[in-house]
Image (tube, rainbow, N blue to C red; front, side):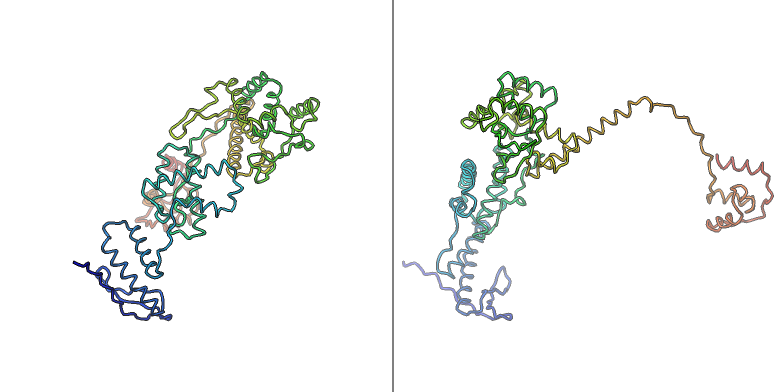
Amino acid sequence: MPRRKKPKLTIPKLFPRGKKGILYFRMHRKGKDVWVSTKTNKPKDAEKAAVAILEAEEYAEVVRDEKTTHELSQDISEKIITSLNGERPDRPQIADMHVKWKELFTVYSDVNAKTQSFYTTVFERFLCWCEEQKLNYVDQIDTAQALKYSKFLWDSKISPRAFNAHIKHLSRLFSTLDAAYKLPHRDPFSARNVPRKKKSEMNTAGHMALEPDEMEKVIAEASKQGRDYLDLFVIGSQTGMRLADAVMLRWDSLSGNFIEIVPQKTSKTGNTARIPISYMLGQLLMSRSKLNGDNEYVVPDLAEHYQKNPSYIRKKTQRIFEDALGKDKTQKKAGKHRKRNTSIYSFHSFRTTFMSLLASRQVTTRDAMRIMGWESSEMIRVYERELEKAKGDADARTLKLVREIEELHYAVPACPEPEKVLKPTPEILGKLVQSYSNMAIGKIYGISETAVRKWLRKYGIVRGKRVISDISEEDIQKIRNELKS
């Protein structure tokens, strides 16, 4: 038996509406008679649009219970566009996102190879999750899916810093593609949709500042490793420079009484650190210039070794800290979202110590920024907290000092209690007027008869009978004592 053909939809009657004459048609939707716009005032285009809309409505009724709202919406939009244009609309796939992003991200070629590799790793992890969730198209990634992925990421015990890095790259990827292709859900990984882990939530182990006795132990331990390591550690402690900057310090970075360098960590921005040369550092540099002043580096052997194998120098300096202070004290153990032990005392502790010393001397934020070569607003906030801490420490010291001054510890004689002042109240006045005249009450309170009259009027007190006007000083004092008690 031949298969019955699907009946062709009848073109509905079109009606122009509004100033522009946009063509509408009427149809039943959920039991209601509604007007549907074709978005055009051209009859042929309007007929095409009307048929496409009716076909999509018919399709929606058939599969409504089988698909999610988003899938249904996407299918309907696709069917309408296909009916109008005669071809299937281009629907970008998630698998192609990273390639397209690299073509559009203008500074991608400036990003170092290590960071590029990290970006690829982040995307591949996201792509793998999407495939497991059977998500193939970019328009399927909305805020709900972004939140699901962020939860999956956090539940995998990833560190807070790595979590933020993953989410930020996905946000960068979606926002770049949205600018070019107008994605339906814009950037689902934006900070507004997917909150980043705050500093307080990170449970990260920041580098601790060294106390004076700890500084002595570390410098003494470095001296056991020879002149080069001793000088490197002195340079770090006297300048607060990071290891890479201290070990690669060049003679041409010296400018009078200052060291001027562009820190390697922030070399792209060209931010310059201008560090004053302390007396001890000046002596060291003078001695080094006599020793090997013809070399471009202040500590040439370590600089050469660092360029070949930076990992060795980092591990060597870390061992010096561990031998000086003890391994248990220099490391913080791994936690729920930190898989490895973290060093809390290392060469970077010289930088933290130097910052704390500047704060303890109340060096202004602007001067500290110039010395340390900061550009991060976060470091400025950290330093301002150090300033507040130093101010609090100074307050504690001065408070203790003042309280220990013996000359301020003297006996203070007791003062006599002031005589209680009588004030009229409605209750007391109400009783006095029953026995005494206004003149007598004025003598008791030491005020005029007119003032007593005003009080009585204010409190609405009326005298009901004749009363005593003449009252002796003895009676006045007696009444006053009774009122005071």
